[in-house]
Every structure is written in structure tokens, then in C-alpha cells.
Length: 80
Image (tube, rainbow, N blue to C red; front, side):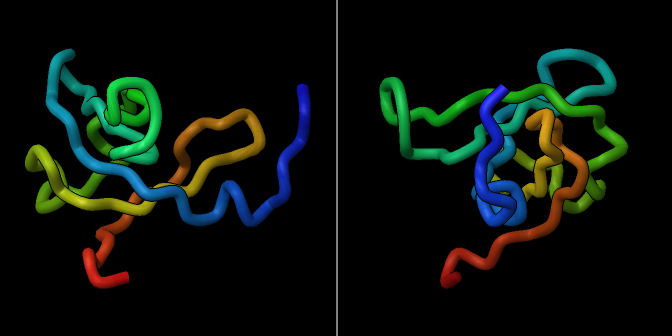
């Protein structure tokens, strides 16, 4: 598997899409970029996202590990 620069994993823009599976949230990584302007969808365990950040369209930052798994989620200020 190709390794990318560490900075590509540290702060990835994302948005909450929906809760489609019990106990999981679907996030859009790189919203507004990609096929049909939608970004890449990723299901994550609900407990990795703080309750106040679980509403659809909430702007987030995510941190990925080298296997492209989400390890940390925090609020993104839209002015950043």
C-alpha cells in the first residue's frame, strides 16, 4: 500500500451525513470534492463522535491512521 505524507492524515475535512446503521454514523470525507460533489463516505462507530457533533451537516475534522481508519473527530470552524 502506498504511504502518503503524514500531514495528509492529520486534519481531513468531513461532515456528518446520517445515522443509517444503528450505532454508526456515516461521515463524508472531503465534502464537496469527488464524484457528484459528495466526497467519500465512511461509516464510523457512534462513540468516536461526541454527541453534540452528531447532527447532519456538522462540519468536522478527522484524523486518520495509516490504514485510513478514523481515529479522532473534532469540530471544524467553518472560518478555518
